Length: 406
View (cartoon, rainbow, N blue to C red):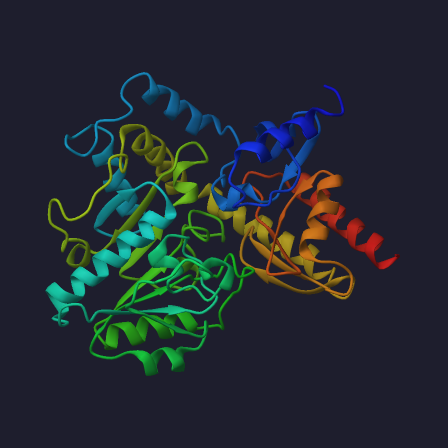
């Protein structure tokens, strides 16, 4: 490969792609496990894992085997017909989360939109809220996707500017403030939609006991609790879902990203029968939602998680990650947050922006992502080795040392 290979690839993309992303200048061509190789043959430790979509590693043999097997049989029927993969997928996913019913979709944003529709229908048909009066409470600094209804209740100006008018029916309260939440609940409130840990905001963890208070308030007021576990779920935080760590059971879970194993887009809303059962034929759907290929891969993911090995590995390595990162506080790091193999690291803004740190890490062979100015996120695949994880943290330590010596 010539030194201009990356430059040519970047130029081609920039000519033809809408500029709705600003990626680091790495052009990936292959990947295996926790490592990505670019077009020039350089290897990088993947510490983003596609925002947790690649929880089980690139090219996971079990998941690839399931995909290949299904590719040779049947990939799409639409939901106009039954197929043999969807029933087992739904049954075992519901059992994994100790819920009753599954609504399969494709992307995380679609699943969030679906949960909103279900909760509104439940509010009108079960709770008895007057037509078009349903209210859903969300948290400030949330990130649930970028569709119009979702950005309607975002507090991130970059997600909202020039995209109005917005969908009504949402009220925002400070994340982690149970008292503020309680004040907003009224007779028209049908749901509280919350991230157990706010991912895009910088891996923000709420105060201890907050989720339990949310659950108690929603139960006491006949309001649904919806946990968006798209980024935090499926092993990332050392449990099947972060709600397990908090010993909280919501009415609905929203899942995505890792549910497709990094192979196909798969998402789902999983909840209690009394809630999910409000939908009637023809009221909601998706041509590709629950397709045979997606269901086959999703089923393999569910069966992998049912063993518990990934969750235990995430928990064990997560403790080591936290210890290593906390040792960097005062050495260019202001604070560290997270759970399992998921960390938000606040870089001293007098040293560098998060983007600058990620660019420096890239040059050393580590892929990470910045958010909100001076925060970087680490979310390596759960199969990462302790040796590779330590090497990645060593590179961060070296970058910070270089920045402090400038």
